[in-house]
View 1 (cartoon, rainbow, N blue to C red):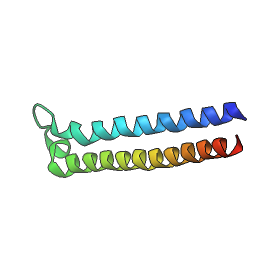
View 2 (tube, rainbow, N blue to C red; view 1 turned 90 degrees about the vertical axis):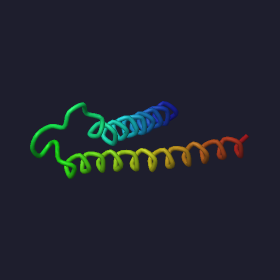
View 3 (cartoon, rainbow, N blue to C red; view 1 turned 120 degrees about the vertical axis):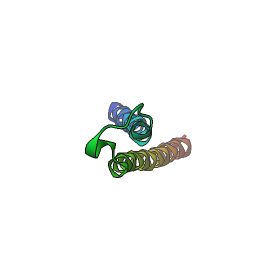
View 4 (cartoon, rainbow, N blue to C red; view 1 turned 180 degrees about the vertical axis):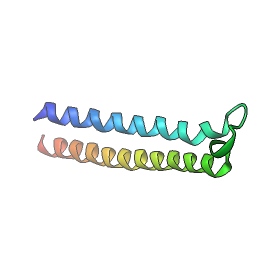
Length: 83
C-alpha cells in the first residue's frame, strides 16, 4: 500500500518535471534561433503555434502540481489526525 503511494507520487512528480521542462523549451526555442528557417518552419504563425504548445505543457504541469500538493496536504492531515 505504501509503495503504491510512493510510486504514484514519483510518477506525478516526474510528470510535473516533464511538463515544465518541455513547456519552457517549446515556449522559448522557436524565438532563440540564430537564423530563421525558410518556409513554413520560419513563419511567425508556426513559431507562435509551437510556443502555444509550450504554454499548454506549462499549464498541465501547474495543474498537476496543484493536485499533487493537495494530495500531499490531505495525506499529512490524515496522518496527524490518526496520531
